Each structure stands twice: as C-alpha cells, then as structure tokens.
Length: 329
Image (cartoon, rainbow, N blue to C red; front, side, top):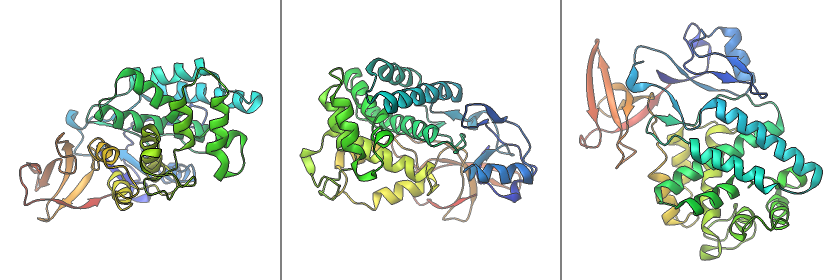
C-alpha cells in the first residue's frame, strides 16, 4: 500500500480504502480498480491523492483511520443536524455537542498506522464544515494526548474544537465568525468559559498578529491548540492539498514568534510527517516505503528499501547519515 497523486498514470491500480460521498453513501469501494473515468470523477470531487495497493502491501502497512469512516459518517450527520438547528434557532444544544465529542474521544485511533484520510467528497458546504470541524477536533485531541490532558480538559478542548467554526453558519462576514460563535456559546450556561473564549481566540497568534491583536498569555491554551490544528487540516485537506510533511514545514515557517513553543512541540511530536505507506527517496539515492514510525523522532521513520527484488530495513533513528530527501508520488 502506498500514497500516490491521483492522475491517469494510476489507471488499473486498486484503491486501498473506501470513498464516501457527501451523504455518507459509499461511492468507491476499497479494492476497486481505477479507470480514467473514475479518476476524473474523483478529481472533480476534490480528491487529489489516494492510497493504492501495490507490491509493498502487507500486514505491516495495513491502512488504519484515526476515526473509522462509518463512525465518522454518523458523527458528521449528527453535527450537520446540529448546525441546521443552530441556523434555525440561533442556539447551540450542549447535550448533542457533548455526545459527539465523547464518541470521538471514545473511538479515536492513536496508533502509529492511523491517518486522517481524504476519503469524503466535497460538494455540500454544510457537510464540508462538519467534516472539517471533526478533523480539527481529531488533530486537537492528538496534540492534547501528547500534552497529557486529563479527561476533563480533553472534553472542554474538544468541544471548543468541534464548535470553533459555528459562527460561519450565522455570520456571512468571515472576519466576524469567531465573535458570532462566542456569543452563541456564551448564551448557553452549560458551556464553560474556557470553551467559548477558545472559540473566540482560535485565529490568534503569539505575536499579536491575529484579528484581535492579543498575544502570548492572553490567548487561552485551548485556542492555541485549535489554531495549529485548524491550520494543519486546512493545509492537508483544504484547497492547498499538501502532504503531511509539507504542511508541517509550512507551519514551522511561521516561527515560534507566532506559535506557542509548548503547543508547537506537542504538534511536532504527535503529527507524523511521513505516514506509513509513503514512498520516499533517501540522500543515498535508495528508494523505499515508510513501514513504521519512531515514537521518539517522528521525522526519522523506518524505511523498507527495495532493489532488484531485495529488501533492506533502514531505521533512520539510528542511521543518522541517511535522511529523506524526497517524497515520491
């Protein structure tokens, strides 16, 4: 199994995971052979990279999702219904919000093979907003797990992450959506101040360059986690469609003057730049596939090198003279 750019060169290859449309209905089943017609349809639906089965496919490269697609579909629908209620009633149902958050926390897969898949088509605005909100929640939970959040903090952070963009439902002016969300949540006494303040501040940066121009310790910790999670999800699943290592590099260029050092460290040490199944080239010229991760240094995974039907395992944590110079798609 390996990750590849979706183009006509993949004609005849078999897709390694199921793709669903915006209604949660299966569009393309895992194992389906790609044709030019299917490739064009997927591209039109906003999917630009896919995992395919190939000669590297074995149990060590089994594809796992951070959140099982069937569970995610159900939660996207539930969140979508909540968004419709918000637009209609101008209020946020706390019980329905907390139920979605608890189910995400109870089902998130934090194993090294788990990745956030680009396996939902992007046609309906509300569906896309719900999908994005859940993805931001997933990344926030991954970072918070590294930071060793307790259950109470995890739930309050996750609520803020899940609802960070609800202002877009009732406010057309993009610049005003955090304030609109803040006012909605503050109107329900069930939501804690840490939740609605984090939603209000989720576009702020350490140096005061955000829309509210607040900085440093004046920005609540949850907001800092949601900020970096939102950036990452937009880079890998939004219009930029970057690979994980590209998104991490782009976020890194913001510098620690914009990002909180502790939160950035949590991000760098919990989000894998080279997920399993990625084909890479080393500075030695050798080509191989990432087959496993090194927990202590995510930027230096374990590679299976292939040459003339021979296989060699290279652990970059210990072979310091070798490094990844290129991702091959």
